[in-house]
Image (tube, rainbow, N blue to C red; front, side, top):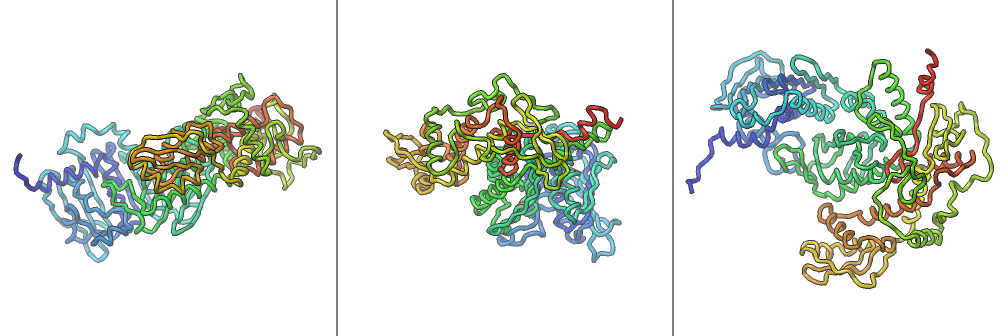
Length: 635
């Protein structure tokens, strides 16, 4: 084996650059973060050829003293931390002292800076070959400008991995977007090949913040969001979460910041997925811009060189807080919240028709996604277990006796009624006169005027025509009632006639012992009968027909990864959703006007009534302006 020797500074920096500098966007990220850490109120980013030829970042921050310029380009040199205590409670975006050294080792870098106490600015230049710093006087206002030219000129293998100019610039633009979302108090400008792409002024007021969100994420997003702001146990979560009807085909509109730092975290992603679990359509993704504020000492940002990952000291507390906050925000959404987005969406479509399109960043409200209306399949109206419109759902098969037993158990405790006798509402006996449409007391979903093909309820509202899928709407109402009824009762367990023996790892077996009480609350009684063997003795009575082995293994997997599990609740709610589908009003059932109005009022009072149990929309709005356009009125 060759003798051990120290790496040269150049080679060490190029190795570090492999972690820090992946592409031009990585350089922009590090330089913009340095500018913000320096207290900049304005950050200008200019790139050429996607950032490969030139990256220039200029700020009006505090600047760097002349004596510190050569040191600024040295590895592990920083002004942001000085001790372990500083590292454990770091509040700045940068702190590792590697970025400038890594960037300068694979490019031709020029740094010009001036502090307020200096009469003139200074410039330091370095090239990746020998990395000898050359200092000279320069003209520059207070602040710093960093120019990075010919990225990867001395590492051709890395340069071959770069994509097209358009792709690389898209990554740069996304990087600037994230930084602009993280700091509303700073202004940002982005230029590409001498063309201004983005120009953002500081956004201090709530209205200015919404305007910036609209400019960066699309006006459709801001029109279809709910604003949240919650605090508990030293944590604060605020920002914008999109309505479930504004969903995405991919997770490309999800921004989460921890103390101003954009992160990608599995714990956060899991909490968000849980909150949206029964309101999103299959394989759709929620959209959000959220900010979590925590004590810096309770979060470790020194996990990865790119600083995209963090580790929370109490991950379970953070997970529960995010989930509860989002879950409540989505539960509190009512039809009038959806109406705001629907009306705004209508104006957007009108603007597009007149050659002034809104940024198409998300799905329209109501029953159209990806610009195409979702047309129900009527081949199996009211088909059992298929969901309305014959769209099959991945559901387990439950015997009719199981369903009836559960309904009867709820009835015994004063819960919901059986499917045969379940009415649309409790008060449908006497007709209710329809108030005038211009009444100040008009409810969000207006008043029913007719039923279409025994499938849709047509309601007249001040904004226009509201079309309601009566089965989907009643399915959600029934589902929420059943969940409430179940929550008011204890989750009863049922002993297995023959205990189920499971072979598991020693880690899983030990986890079962340490979480025995928590498993018992889930209705599971599991004993360790060997170093790698478990015996399942009791399961929730409601899930006696489920795959017990898979359920237990999923619960243990959740406990290992997240410290908790909601598998039992998820499977239970899936069963309730299936039963709610069977117990809801079917297609081709003729309803009276009072029954239709009663259903509309129930929708307005029910959590998550904008979507059925499978995430499909329950209603949509056709505005008067859209109807006028169909008939060429006003032309």
